[in-house]
Amino acid sequence: MNAIEVSGLIKRYGRVEALGGADLSVGRGEVFGLVGPNGAGKTTLIKGLVGALRPSDGEARVMGLNPLKDRAELRQKIGYMPQGPALYEDLTARGNVGFFGAAHRTPDLRKKVDEVMNFTELSGRANDPVHTFSGGMKRRVSLACALVHRPEVIFLDEPTAAVDPQLRSRFWRTFRELAREGTTLFISTHLMDEAMLCDRIAILRKGRIIADDTPRAILEMGKTHLVVRRDGAEEEETIGGHPEDLAAALRPYGLQPGVTAIDVETDTLEAVVLSLIEKEEVA
Amino acid sequence: MRRTFIVAGRVVRQLLRNPRFLVLSVAAPLVIVYLLKIFFDTLPPTFDVARYAVPVAAFLVHFLAFLLCAIALVQERTAGTMERMFINGFRRTEIIAGYVLGFLGLATFQAVAGLTEAIWLFELDYDEETLATLFVVVWLLAIASVMLGIFISTFARHEGQVFPFVPLIILPSVFLSGLLVDVDELPTWADWLGHAFPLFWANNVIQDVIESGWTFEEVQGSLAILIGYSIVLLLLASLTLREVE
Image 1 (cartoon, each protein chain N blue to C red):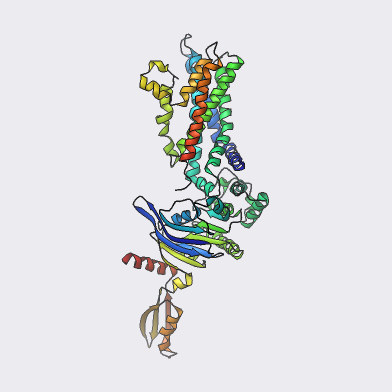
Image 2 (cartoon, rainbow over the protein chains, first blue to last red; image 1 turned 30 degrees about the vertical axis):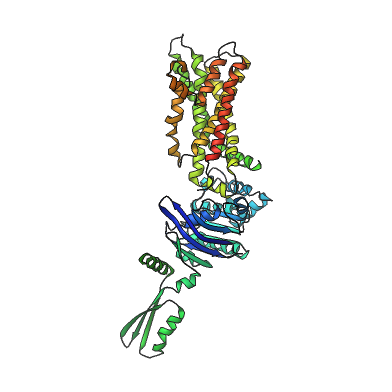
């Protein structure tokens, strides 16, 4: 059984369609990235999966459970880190984590709070009120709140937006550690370097999934721009993004002494995603 | 039930850690009652201070308990903590009951402080039974105000949207609940409309008990309606507080 199954999920707000029939599945222990521009429907999809939103149509299952009908059971199995901090500023970091942990009837709560504070490297500031924290530290407290009850699936809505590269790298070490222990991570992001770190990504555009594969495979959907300088002249060629396309394109040149330079420029993931989105818009 | 106490404990901890909030909710009514005393001192000695002093103190408790509770709950929504509470497994009834319990302490303190100051400053001389009834009615009014705050908060998306309910619900009650003039002197429709405000029933009890020779039978109806008011608002709030978008 997959950790997450989504089939034809639609959410309309009046005449606005936030989700237009999304389909996807996420395996257990997978780090899955939901990529898309602002307003693509990433948060709406996550809210549909955690039971905070009633879909207009379609079906979603998380750990085999319906997010609305089985929400009491499901909420013991999932963790959720929203886009904003969603913390009590007047309470301490420990107070916040303990409060949300208590909602899950977590056994040995005090011990688990200590462990998650260590895990997120917050122990030194555990008893300080959250309003004294930087934005990055608040994100760590928010992550600790989502992890304290040891969920099987964690939904993270743009977890590293507006955090510095050092903290982002620390977050990703944490995510990888969780995935190694078998936790499924569902991460929404609009940062392409972050998407490259996922096991698999889906590209969401206007509430529809337009591509769903490994970051590597998506990258190979792009183009490679080749410039070969031979006998003082430049020959330009645009080929496919697959490594085999590059080998095929270079084969005719062999090791001719006249070839003095080869410049290979491959599309970035951002360029591939943008071109996929543009193709959809044209279609 | 356990999670209700967890929410209540968190609400109390938050209130205690927010000095500005505490000062506003407790000191502000005390200062206003003092200003009322200065104002009443300028009026002729024949002016019936007792007729207005306790009802005005009750109104201040009513207004602040409503406003502070509504704003605190709306802040939960705007900060995203309300959604997070639901996703973490807290139920609607647990959140509402937790808020009621959490604010009960504040409402009790407001009722005791406001009433004690009014009685002391205006040198009102009541027997123990009257004092106890006055405290109970102001306390019940404070609870109804907390419920009203919870109910109204479900219609506001941000703190600013709470304020239009002040001229809509709180200010009319000043004129229509018998606080300033006897409701018998109002047009019939206004008299009836006044019955919709919890302050009307609280003022009914206050006006009865500050007259000498009152009996419990005379006020029990209004006290029961005040309690019923809280229960109905609690039920309405638990119906309108949205768990799912």
